[in-house]
Length: 324
Image (cartoon, rainbow, N blue to C red):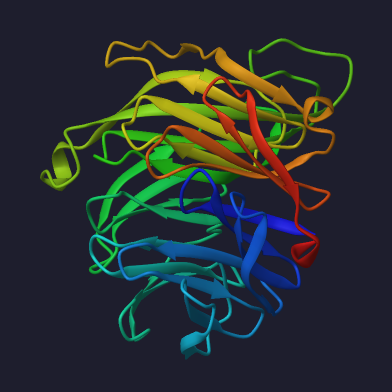
C-alpha cells in the first residue's frame, strides 16, 4: 500500500510503499528507479540529492540519481524529517519515547531527546528547530541541544479520554505552526462544547502564529491561535514554501486553506479548495506541495499518484504498481 509521496517537482515524485520505494517521472510516464524494501517513512535531502528511508530495522540514505544505498544506520524509527539547511535528520523511536537526531553526511547520531508520547516530527526550513507532535500538544526544540523553545497545549473537551497530534508543520520562516490531531470523546461533548447523543471521536486542525521568529530568546516565545477547522482524520499537514497556504490530507479528503494574517482570531478556517475521496476515486494517503509551491501531489490508497494545481484541478494521474 502507498504510504507517502515526496515531490521533486510537478512531474517527478518519490513514492513510498509498504514494500518499496520508486522515483516516477510523469512526463516520460516511466519509473526512473525502484527498490524493493520494507518502508516505514522517508525524508528528502534535496541539496545533497539523497533521500533517507526508515525500515523496521535501519535507516538508509539513498541516492536520488539511481536509488543505490549510500549509508546505513541500525536505528528503529518512524516519522523521519530532514533539514537540508543544517544537515540534520530526525526520527521518532519505535517506542515513541525518544526523538533522535543524526548528521546527514555521516548518519552519526548527534543526540536523543527524551520526549514522552512523540508521534511525528518536522523541521523549520531555515533552522535546526524541530517541532514534535505529542499526545497533548506540540513542542518546538533546538534539535542539536534539545533546549525547549515552545510548548503548545492543544485544547480538548473536558470529556476527552485520549488525544494525539497526528501531523505537525512549521512554516519556512518559523512564524507559523500547524497541527492536526484527534481525540476520543466519552460523553458526546463536541469540540464546540455542545452535548450530543453519542460518544465518539473528534478531529481538529489548528494554526498558530509564533512570535517572535525562530532564533529569538527562549523566554520571549509565545503562540497565538490564528484559526482552526474540524475536518475528518488528517494524517498530513504542510505549509507552502511562501507560508501563504496550508495543505491538509487524510481520511477522506485533501484540503487547501489560505493562511490568515497576523490578526487571525482563532475563528473557523474554511478551505479554499477541497477534494473528497469520491472526486479522487480512492482515499488519499498522502499529499505535499511541490518545492515551488505551485502544485500539489497526492498519493491514493490504490497506489495512484497525481498532480493538481492549487485550485485542486487535475493535471496528471498515474498508477504506480511497484509501490502498492
